[in-house]
Image (cartoon, rainbow, N blue to C red; front, side):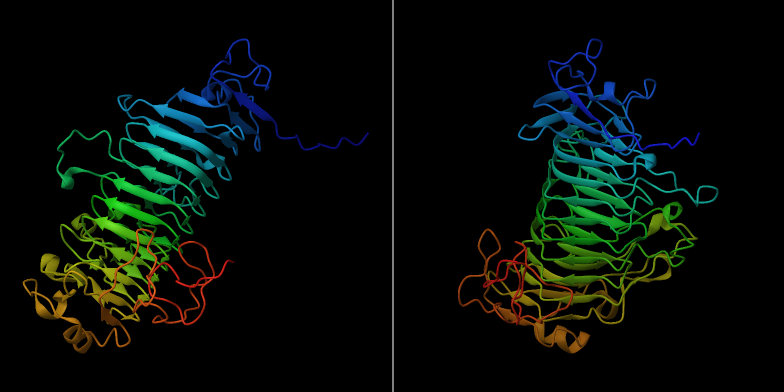
Length: 455
């Protein structure tokens, strides 16, 4: 007799506040009381492809850990909230293991955790773990993540092809004592160290203790698009940043670039302590059609080329950024710095950029004061800055850019008659705007197209 192994059908598991972990069986009629009951590995009830549905209400649970490919979501039409007390030592609200690659979190509110709201784990490490991988092909959608001890979402090396969309993240760093100095805080909205092919779109990241979103540690082919980043204690979006030497995959990235081929487009960034958009050891970055308002309130510039020191490790590379493409960005700085390229005397002299910044077709608003442009590579660290004409001559960049009195609405929309309308380059890297509407050539400068068509 020929025995054929038939695939097992995925099952729905139900969890409710009025459920019972002992008398329940996980059905809709007899739900369990906690998510961790469904995920209990000693019972081994779940299988790859199963769906866990949470009825409306708050679930006080920590370290909800997915070890198989599962979907965890609210019941359609209901709103479930998973909360972990900040005081629970070493806690994370939800963790996703490498074996749970392909999992999905959706339609959930997530708060607390001493460390993170959501953490994607990895089995990769240099040396014997070089062939390991992280939790990959994970979808995080329609999430509301807030009041986390540190980062809202933490992505570790080799957690590739992660998509984050239609989500809101706010009030990171809630575990820090009131008055903690900014330089002692470390609580991003999204912190990606070495995860490639990440896509973050249509999300709102605001009121973060430090940076809104960054991807670093050799992360490649990341796209950050159509997001609103507001009220960041440090920076808005960073393409690369500063990573310890041990986290770089030197087979894929022997030069120690912090980010490769990152794309940042159609984002509205407002009110940051430091860079609106920063590039640190970024290779082949594309920064197009973003609107940056009131960035760099404490230092740096709206567009900033920074230097990674990589823990001053003698083995690290610390390369300058190279070959950026920066087009169609609208900078409204009210007299603050618009573009800055750093140079440092440390470690024998380090430069933030090789060659030209390749900035063009940008608009620099003169409303509230003219922009300031700084290139420390040629002018020294104490240089006070250039105006637009001086910048053009020195850098051979921004030939088609403009300076004008430009303001936008709260939603980033350009008023009728704005100098930024139809003044941008028509780019193959951009097809829509912040709101997902199709752009019409010639493109406007900034994140919002004034006469955009519905897709």
